Each structure stands twice: as structure tokens, then as C-alpha cells.
Image (cartoon, rainbow, N blue to C red):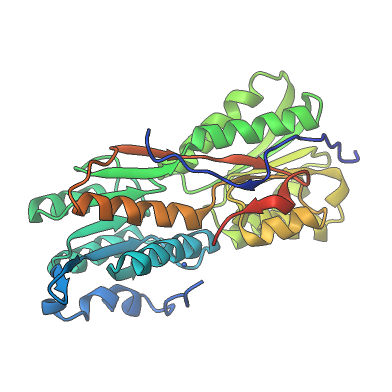
Length: 339
């Protein structure tokens, strides 16, 4: 069937983040050894907080990234770096390349450098707990972002409301398709609370519409190539698909390639999550209907600023929720996702 569209009246412009309640830097080398040793090669004497000309204290912060191959997390790191540059903070950055075991080693290396605090963007919510506990034992404050940890003492977590994102996506498809149709859901890394909650929110809305049927629900690990491969199989198994929800834009863009190759672009209404640059262009080009804006650049800035405030002795919230919004052709031209 032909795509059905609705006009959504959304607020355009800069998404405003509330911190009260709740990188385009060159990506690192692909070899894991290089990623793991970025922190380890630092000189120990440079890792302690110091004064700049005897005045303002300069902090050193470790940043344990889960990956730098996903554009979302590249922008996260860019946001952290931008805020660090503005505040005079020195960063030690590692890249686990989506491997929980590698991230554990990364955090071990960072601990030996004795930074003032460590920010972790977790690969796996459960696997990272022991690393956070090691930081706790070493007396190094920990902050997490985007994906929460299942345990350990964390000063503050900053992220987006993943359940809300899933609900926004589900409601968009329900409204656009008139409350009926065959739906496909592509899930992310289910070891993370983000993937779990985006799916939970989405299914909560879809379950309210008995004429909407999820004909396929498969994991594609937040990965573009996997999204394409999984969608190819789903298309072969299903002659009629009305809507697609991909829990992140990378999977959405992979699925888009498969859908275009199958000549079924006009049949399927698509929505993703994150509002990365490629998806924004796809919406402007009429190939994708919608996404949920969770600007990673501003997430990165927010977590670094929170860490800095904490080190300065200011009170910080234990849990910070940033704003997320539906993005369609109606408001995409006014969207601001980075500086």
C-alpha cells in the first residue's frame, strides 16, 4: 500500500535540554590495541589535576567510549571534547569497539592513570558493573551516559528517556497508519537498558491497537550492516509490510538500503531514533518519514559539564533526562543537533 502521511506540528529549532531534574574529531584507529592503549600511553605525571599558571585547577577526565564506528557515538565524543576544550579539561579517551571485555580493560587502564573522574558510555549494562566497582574502590568518581549501568556507585547518569522514544515511535506509526497494519521492529543491543526500554515503550503503544500486528521483531544490534541483512530476510518472508520501527538510525538506514533494493520504498512507513545526519537527509529526501531526535553532541556536552561541576564541588543531579522529540518533514529543516 502507498505510504500514509500525517502533518505533525512540532516545535522547530534548538532542542532545549533540562539538566535540573532528572566528536567532528578524527575517529580513532580501528585496531583494538591502539584504542585500548590511548589512555595507557599517557605520562603518569600528567594525569593528576593541576593548576594552570598557579590559578585555575585543570582537571583530567577519562572517557571510556563504547564505540567510535557508530556516528551517534562519534558525535557524543565530539560534544564531550567541545565542552572539555571550553572548560580547559584534559581528556583520555578509549574506544571499546562495542566489546564489553575491551571496555573493562580500558577502564582498568584509565584507573592506573588516576584521573579526577571517569565518564563511561557502556557497552553492556551488566558487564560494566565490576569496572565501576573498581573505580569506586580506587576512589575515582564515575559518571555514565546514554546507557545505564546495572550496579556500582555512579555520581550521575545523563541520557534520554528511552521509553518515551519508543512510545513516540509507536504513536507515530499508529497515527500515520490509522491504527492498523503489519509492523516490523528492529531491536538494538538487548544487553543495554536503552534497547530494552525503546522496545518496551514501542510495544506498549502498539499493544493498544489490536489491528496493528508486529509480523517481525528481530535484533540488529544498533548496526547498519546488520540492519540491512536482517531486513532483507524479513522482506523475503513478508509480502506485506506497512510500517518499520528501527530502535536507532543506523539500523534504519541499513533497512532502508534493503527496502530500496527490493523496490518496496513506497510501501513502508519508516521511523528510527537518534536523528543522525544521514537520517535527517533521508527525511529531507522523502525516503524516511521520521526519527526521534536524541542529539548525541549535546549529550556529550552535558555529561562533561556535569562532571566538571561535580569536581568543582557543585551539587549535581543523580539522574538527568534530556529532551527528545519527534522529527518529521514538518520540522526537520529547523532541527539543530550540534554546534
